[in-house]
Image (cartoon, rainbow, N blue to C red; front, side, top):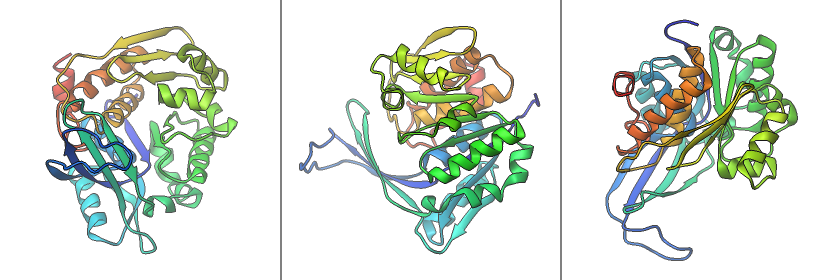
Length: 301
């Protein structure tokens, strides 16, 4: 594998509007919040930034509106040296917006994402980026874009023999053929249960593996990560840190896992390094700005 893997990220871009609260409100309740901040976000863009800072040569495929939010999102990715040739501007929809509340004590969050230009990323968008797929060593995607786009990504990866890492969040049912195209699936425990119909994590992982996923990774939050491939099942405990903001931690993990896999690391090695990176990310505010750089993670192992 190349020293600097070529990573294609297909996904969403949002602006995160964040309010840090003393506590999260209950349904119907108003809570007077504290500090308000805006950050670059969206699962796809977050994972692209994570992968770029981890050392990858990254191309981002997505869409933004013809508004200042879209211009800002594009400029942020360019500053990270991410190729935005396939980050298209659409006139028919606004750029993505995510409203986020962060608990000031537990650092848990609540997130709502509005309909936006992300909804325009479909199979035609994906097919038009054929050259980017050919050049990629690893393709990463999530489910904040249309189902047709995910099917097209899976089809192209299968046809070209490219490894596909899917982070199926927000959780929704997936066609069987998508599972068969996956080199790695990364889910949290709730998504594992939703997809498999199994409450037990080991049973859920077994189900996902049986569908054709060659490598199954389940993030267990502050506990750590469990994983399985054709040779073993293992667990990597999370590092104990003082969390400031958990927004984007999962995306950090996915981006770093994609880089590790693209570099040819064994799954266990890639998971361990991605866990370390995510533990650094939660000590910082903001999804994209909080992503750690490679030298800080590798040197601190």
